[in-house]
Amino acid sequence: IEDGSVIPLHGTLSGVFKGSSNQFGETAALRLRRAFDFRSGNTIDAELHHWRENDMSTAFDLLEHVRSGDLLLRDMGNFCLESLHEIDAAGACFITRIPEGTCVSDLEGNSIVCAGWWRSFSRE
Image (cartoon, rainbow, N blue to C red; front, side, top):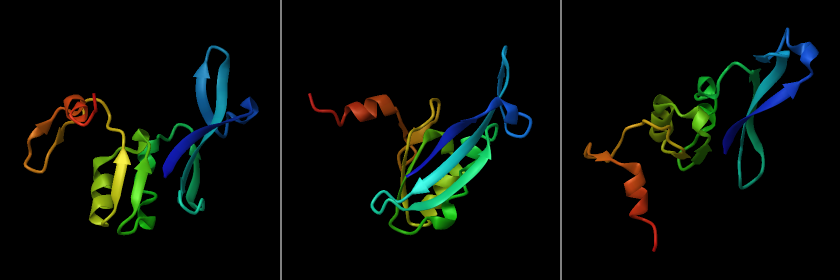
């Protein structure tokens, strides 16, 4: 499982760890990206980044740990088609939310309307 969290810091650190800005001034924050093995509970990888560095910029950081047969659960912030192709090429699978506006197709290239497709699996 891979996810990221924002860690707020004391405002006096805003010169080094810039966070957001608002009418009250600048804030300080870090972004933590962590990946762990759900079955064992062990951390696989963890990194601190500047708050302004978005999750997608770290989409490839975990790939060196991906092995054939793995199932990777990712936050939508890490959605990057090229990294998903690399996970697939390693023989692993992934589950991720799909950003709005993403075109999805089946193996024959036919467009899938996700809302309707998911409803076909629901039980009434």
